Length: 141
Image (tube, rainbow, N blue to C red; front, top):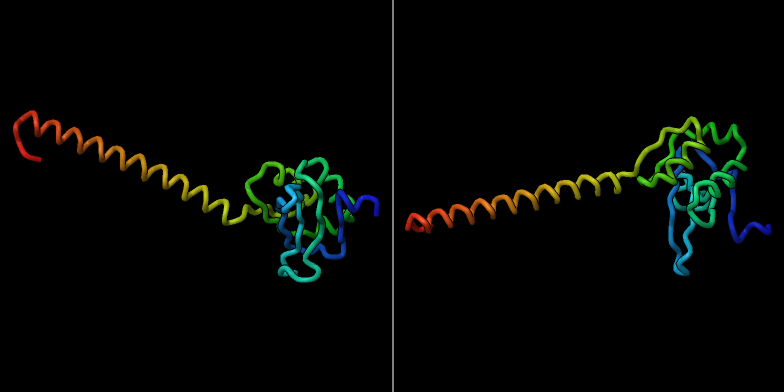
């Protein structure tokens, strides 16, 4: 168990639907967690923990899981991180890769907010032009 400082693997906990994500613990260290959705956060949920998020390191650990078990994974959910995408594609070749809803919604909300702000500035500029034009013609606005 010399590796326990760097990674833990619970191969028996693997299932058809997994999630992978990075988490920063209170000490500031970042870890990559692979979890089985069927576990619903209870005993048997944790499949692997790897210190860091470097794709090569995580792939090396996760490839210790038997290939037949890795091929049995049907879906893996992850954020929009290119590192997590690379890990998922390399380790779980047959799995459908799903981006988690939170990150997709955030992209849409951010884009919508950018549009809203742009339209607000356009409306203010138009109103200012109309005020300026009304003043130049001696009219009230």
